[in-house]
Length: 484
Picture 1 (cartoon, one colour):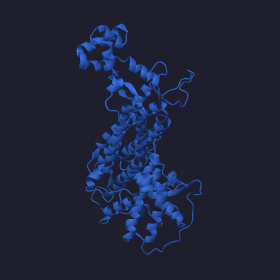
Picture 2 (tube, rainbow, N blue to C red):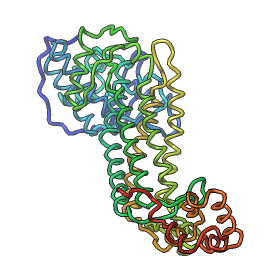
Picture 3 (cartoon, one colour):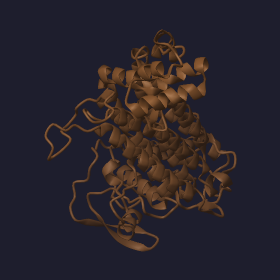
Picture 4 (tube, rainbow, N blue to C red):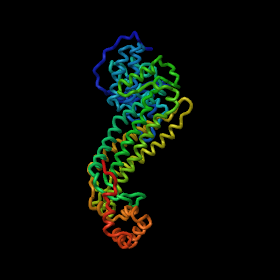
């Protein structure tokens, strides 16, 4: 099967692409199928396109890029052991590099809604690598010679162990390389604002009602810390993804995989990606469950929760400009209304809230899908990887846009902040240790009922003199230690 006696053919300098029209015949175990002549995929990919043309949801390209690492690692291990002739291993690895780079993305057309094991996507990769390799040695596309999609590209593998392996690689890459740096940049920008505004005293709000003072910097330091903690949670949630199912083949026993293949392929994937991927300790758990993916999804949820709180706070604090809170002046990025001239809306915050709603919804679907493992396989893999990658991508992009088009340009409306502070009745809290809670409460109610200032009501009550009021009720002294 390995063709160890075959002479190594010359590798031709053929750019990616097939100059052909119409269709060609490809075969699988069910017979012949007509495939577009300008595509590298084969019969099983074409059948999937026919049977699963459901909606517009396509398997994320990141899955295929990750699959490139799986196929390259398998070819490396099989070639080093002599199971594949060196030239065949090198040919597969060359095409796998094109897959990893995204150069063959147009040839991965499958829908998310396919077999729950991801078999069609695995075979899509096998067929594309096979035909592209055949093209590079001047062979006949669809002939499966000299590189066979199953016998060579899929050697020692099953869809049941390679698809979850690709899922883990794709998710780690998306979260570690794109999402976390984007959130870190947003967190740093918010922390910078907290430092800049550390001495600006404002009125606090609890239960949506007036509360005691704090500084704007203190308020924003809370946002910064929430994001820092969320980054820690997201990072921790990816740790389970470093265990790879590769080598477990169909049910976790490793049937048809050579001895030590699982350890060797995990080590090779780690070397390729730079991440500490390792062989899963128990393949039966790696194939029968999707717990690590569900955990990663929960990490994304843990990020969406504080992001929604922060975005909502900012859009409420920026409401106005005349009839809202109007403590913040948000950047005017685009007109806000087709009918009301001059209206500007908190669009970046609204977009972030919608992103967070989507992520929370997808996490719920992922948790449910994670419960659907039956016996030796969880066959809900495509929906989970699609949701996790989608959530990570929109969170990363959303953080970048919120930072660039909102947070970096947000300004304080100092006059409004000072007005709210001076008019707040909750400054009466400073009087409570001096004249008692009940008398302080009576002063607050008197001021509110009569529409007077807190100072006027306090002096009129006879509980405290004007001089003592001015000495005790100092907002800047009520905010505690200011540091940011």
